Image 1 (cartoon, rainbow, N blue to C red):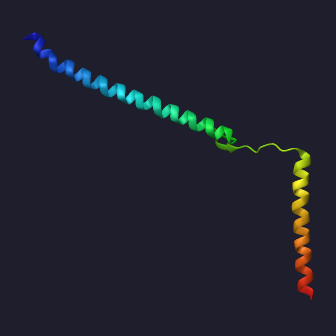
Image 2: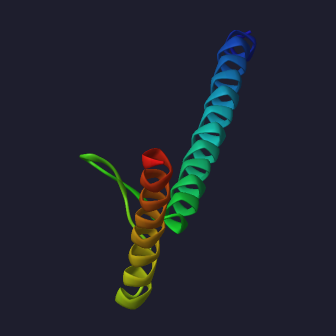
Image 3: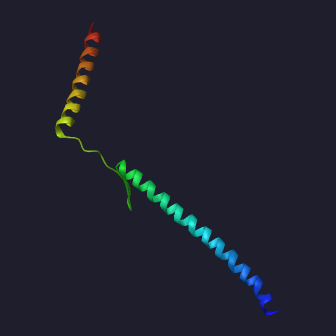
Length: 89
């Protein structure tokens, strides 16, 4: 009769243990998923810190930067010149 009284206790421990194991597996999976997300964002130059997210800029050479800036300035200058000459006529 003594072993029969312990059967509900054993079943309870088995159920609680099973639920705990499933919960732990979910915990491990969510941590792995978060880590994958962090690595993916780091490849895109986004880093999470205590202060928030920081977005990095991919480095380009000074020559390429100057060329792009000058090209944009010349396009803007030409567009402004074309617009003002037609407005006067």
